[in-house]
Amino acid sequence: MAIQLEGRIAGLWVAELGQAWAQAAPRLNSRKLSINLCDVTHVDRAGKMVLMNIYDQTGASLVVSNSWTQFLAREIARNNDENVKPL
Image 1 (tube, rainbow, N blue to C red):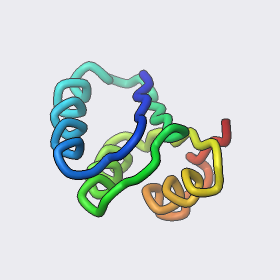
Image 2: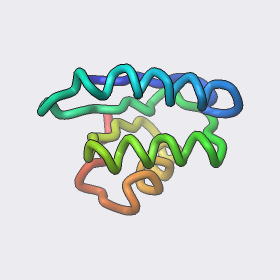
Image 3: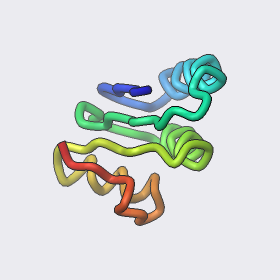
Image 4: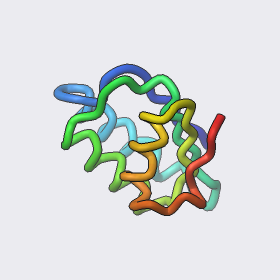
């Protein structure tokens, strides 16, 4: 299962991501989750917390495309580079 995120994960979009995850999580079952962060441009503190929560629940692979998204992914994964995958 893959989630592709784009733009800003901030403000009202954090709640939207949380709701989307709440609906998708039960359908994940034993499948591995991949979160594509390549087109994310900004994440506020609340957005980072939601992403960390999803990561903690799933151990998702975090797909990155540049140094900023790699930095973000390393923060989400708490420096577990094993789950950070360059595109």
